[in-house]
Image 1 (spheres, rainbow over the protein chains, first blue to last red):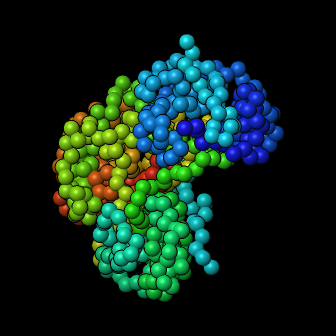
Image 2: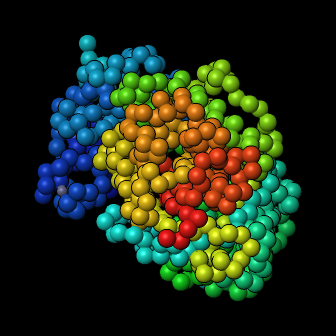
Image 3: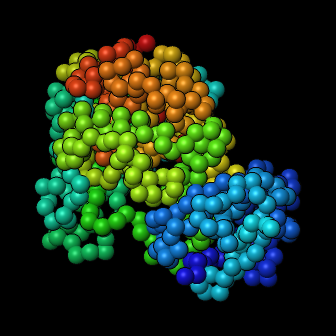
Length: 135
Length: 427
Ligand SMILES: [Zn+2]
């Protein structure tokens, strides 16, 4: 079963559109240059309302994980058990993504390992970021 | 005009403000607890959230030895804990909403208990603890002098929070696509905790068993009345994974019941039936995370912050706290509170060693003497209730043998919680 899909809104449409072009962009404050993810209307650090987008290269590290056996999200229940890893971004480890870690068996997650960005199609065709442990 | 949420200004969320300005001038004078049951059949109106709430409130009034005409304030946590029941066929009029069935507004209580002298009502969303601190602040600020704080927990047939969504919008899109919710957050956090402090899930067992044991010493609780089973280590280790490393026995069981607290001024409490339990402070955590999840560092910062606020506003320190009842549903976040408050001098990373020592109510370190929500069913008020009972000397089988003059309880998560500091003395 494919993943559920995001519905883009005014704030995050550039992010999801970039995903469809297989690019990962992170919201960055025009004033204090701080990266922010998930995207918000304004910078949560300085309050600046001018937010820009910065493309990142798509490398990260496994920060930690858990293994889901009983998800509330029905669309994901067929995958159980599945990993949910927290990925920290190379450019700024404070920025955290979630990942099902395609290619990594449940509960065999190498914490600290390098991961590489890929994109996965959700049920309606939207691409979303995923991460795979680098060889 | 329908009741509104208590404003954000009633919640004390900042450090550096010194002693709480109403410290010792507010007290608990009554407590009430309706019978517990696993579920409501949706039909028997004597067991609706409304009916159980009236039972709990009447008990709290009787406990304090006052009448409903003495009450001039009501603060409720209006939503039940389960999913919203609607849409469904309603009973015949006047049942045209969930109010009084699976949820409970302050207005419903005022009307249905004929509380004719009520001049202040407010709601505290999500958690009884949120309503409780709002009620305490309202009494401190003189908005009400005799205030009922109440929640009913509705639990109908079926599973909570099952999500049919194929799409997620707004910030939820950045979680829901991967199935990230509170449960993975807590499981992930505990996994990080184990990695950081070189411990493991099995070492939770003594705490889990002790919670159930304390629950079985509580005649008001769900397990005492309906599931009188002692847990073994083997039971705990064999429990199915919900989200590894969280198993089913790390979760509190949803139940149908209601609980009430009667908050009044210290002055009035002295003329009521029970020995007053004074409130030295209340405070709230409203944490904001940096990115998509709460990291262990953030969790520890949040719980350090809560503890410092509790201590600062009450004028007490870790060594002064006799009774300690943080929320345990999920059990896997309990250690953050224990270590943040440094109760019995437990420091970061030491909770599991402490669990392996004597934490029974008979021993020197009666941790979570309430049995919590894993021991009694999910209400989030067992801790508050136990603090009051212990300080009164009315905790029955659970009465601690150690000093019981001060107490702290609170819920819900590290990032969002509300806390009360109690004392047998106003100063
Ligand atoms: Zn900024």
